[in-house]
Image (cartoon, rainbow, N blue to C red; front, side, top):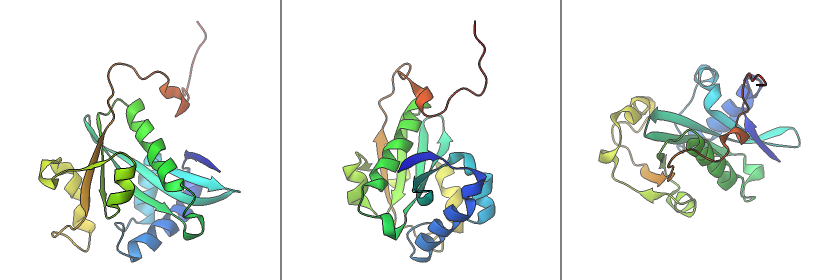
Length: 171
């Protein structure tokens, strides 16, 4: 099992996983085009060459990121993959020096176990609501808003484990 950045070759697998969750009303519908356009924010869990999990870290501003589109294939549930993916996305937010990470979720207990606490939706950026227009439940949102502070202060010890430099010269 590995967690890695998604590539364009993962788009069909991501689309399928998210569609299954969206049909259950657990996630917003994401079109294949939207996934392509936002592929840089997606990470996948791969097991034996098969994508069995997906999640994205969406930057909302310099002080807030959102974990979204979190889905684990039914065949891979119960192995802790969701927690591992949340931890990896949270670490990415820390490496980016973003002080708070948001989740809009129906899975309050899961995210509480990941260190998130419930907050009032009215305390959140207006930017988060732009995607809500695509939700069939809009404007009556029944998701729970949860936040976890990254406690970043100064430089993170080694953010490069997430993404190596694109180009580097020797001095």
